[in-house]
Image 1: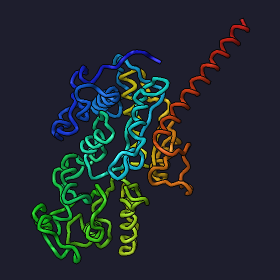
Image 2 (image 1 turned 120 degrees about the horizontal axis):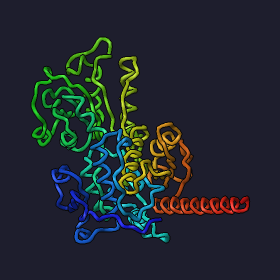
Image 3 (image 1 turned 30 degrees about the horizontal axis):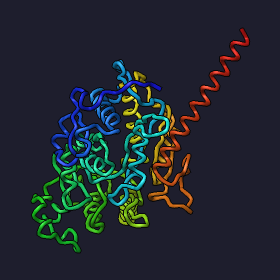
Image 4 (image 1 turned 30 degrees about the vertical axis):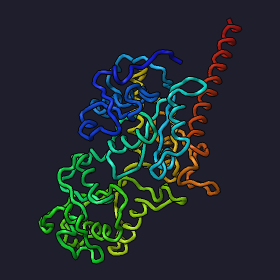
Length: 432
């Protein structure tokens, strides 16, 4: 283990520390930055090394692209981090529940940041299916909730903004998803409210409030072709939103008021995730975006007789884990000069169908290049007394236990490896 020290954010060129209270989206978009709770602004927190290192790794990865592994690694920076393993966390049901930190979450982060019996600092990232918020908003929220420095994240939705022109975005409060989509780079964003404002007979049982009317944009949808549909967040009006989505899916080239004879001319539909249920402040899991997807698929087939083809991002899709692996590999290259991801990544989640399934399937695939180890917690969707549909490598009560388990497992692996090395050395001496 190294006793060297990584440069703090304030000393790292080009990296800015912004307040979680006053930071603006424009400031976060300007370049490398970490978000800091006000009480940590005058002095870096225990999390400053992780936040700074991951932010710089993310920007370097974005600059060099997916083929970054072919770039000559820079000289490693001094660090007290282990490079052998890392943690990846789901957020809702693992760290946060109902907008509030799970009791053990803050302590778990402190343990990872070096407040443990071994004095080791462990790298970590957050991988969430949460939609309806920009990465900047989620970053600001997490920084306040977990009382630590957080680096803004990445979403595959940004890549889609370059592919489509006019798009329909669904979900969330009011027209908030429009702002999210525009923040991702989408140039022409339509909401269900815009469509209802143009023709209030679109949804027989939903009428816009005055506030919704004021925030909806007027346009002639008889002359508009919608190229793609994106469900960014959970729908607040299942009936109305599904009616509009079905109209488009069955249309000719995304033009409302038309009907395809083949039902094969409508725009593609994308979901930000596929979680059937998710963890909230309620004592029982609530239905989520995956349930809306299942409902749409059933109705589409009932009407057209055909299967609906749709795409979901997030876990358990392989791409989510691939990006996480590339980010951790870039971090290891920057801090240790080793052009490979950490040997083991412990993924901590609360949903067997997405978190555990995704981790296990990625680990079993030829794309992983390292070991992904799934840990299921009992603070979210999964509850004691039920059998998970996808079996984790380990099940624990909460995120703090997950962190301690992973660190202890690595310590024992290290001891076993050293014993093996000593044994081999002794055998070599005897042979001589």
